[in-house]
Length: 219
Image (cartoon, rainbow, N blue to C red):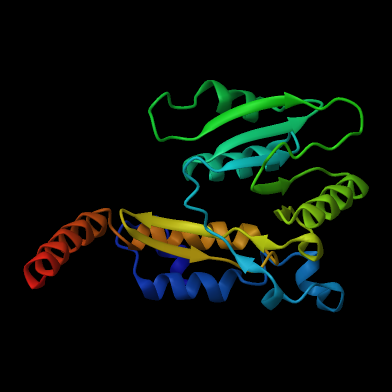
């Protein structure tokens, strides 16, 4: 396609993104996308892009998926505890490389002991293990405790789903497939990041300051 010929060109346009969607929507479809009859209605779930600062979150799992979920929460300023019997290199490196700056998220790795599930005051829980029986137990416990839970690759167990986010200063564009194909949402986010320049954030920040001045004058 024309998109494929120009994908490495820095001058990507919105039309190129539209062509990317057309050419790749089916390519990134998952089993859940093809088995709609067994899925939970997306309209019953929340789309959550947590501001996160200081929010205590718990991620069950120690693999690559858990690392990606933890990083997303850390980038939003959340305090994250990953619970697992073993931790991947990606998670260990994420902990080693975390920023010491104030206001950034904090990552803690906690070895799971036995089969007891502890939520330990978490306000948001993400489950990223390959053991569905365990995932179900965590999801049910979260519901009893009235804690929002997201289970990776299992929309039927989710209360919310986290979008792929394009950020340019105060501008945030959330992209979600409702758990149907997170890979497609991530790839689409990458295409939008090529289209929207960093300068947009600075322009919006300036517009916000001007708006605040006008509001103070009116008062």
